[in-house]
Image (cartoon, rainbow, N blue to C red; front, side):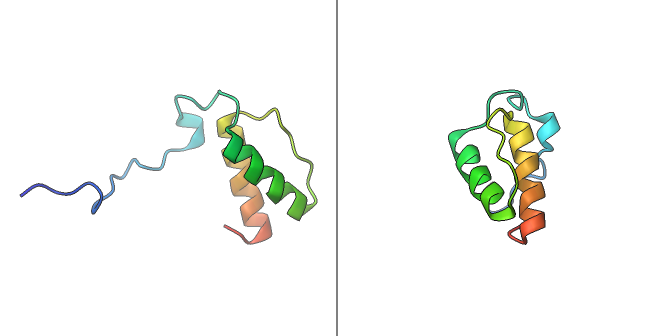
Length: 69
């Protein structure tokens, strides 16, 4: 019997953004849009020059701050 990967997600599915291979690339459009929304809600300044990894960490930080996370 073969395990269905969708039924049993692998433990490494979530990686620390610092370990991302593409973490140094410019943040995605989706990240930028969501981050801008979170910044507006939190009264924080939006930085459009973040990398994917930095944006992910900032999103986590603002979600925690706003209670969205």
